[in-house]
Amino acid sequence: MTTLELKQAKNQLNELLEIVLKGEEIIITENNEPVIKLTPIKLDKKPPRQPGSAEGKVWIADDFDAPLTDFEDYM
Image 1 (cartoon, rainbow, N blue to C red):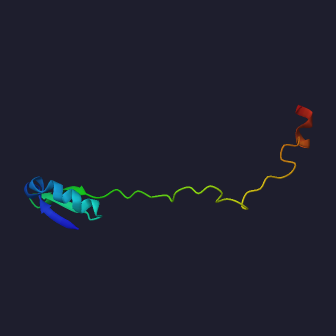
Image 2 (image 1 turned 45 degrees about the vertical axis):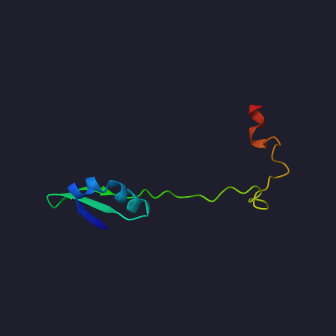
Image 3 (image 1 turned 90 degrees about the horizontal axis):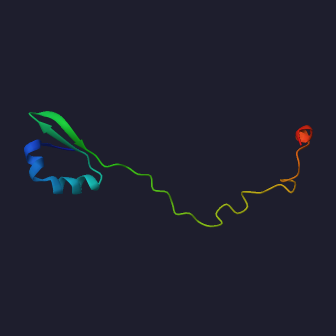
């Protein structure tokens, strides 16, 4: 983690953003007190969808659309 004064950070913003984008956190201080924390947002990258990837894992019963006997009174 990098720490530097606000006056320095103003002059080096582009460089600081490049460092943050690489994964490092930066603390910016003013009068030796931390005031700003630059940190990257970690986004979960999902793998690309693959057609047919659930083949053999999902099945539908032969009587899937058959009437339910429990509801005969309501039909």
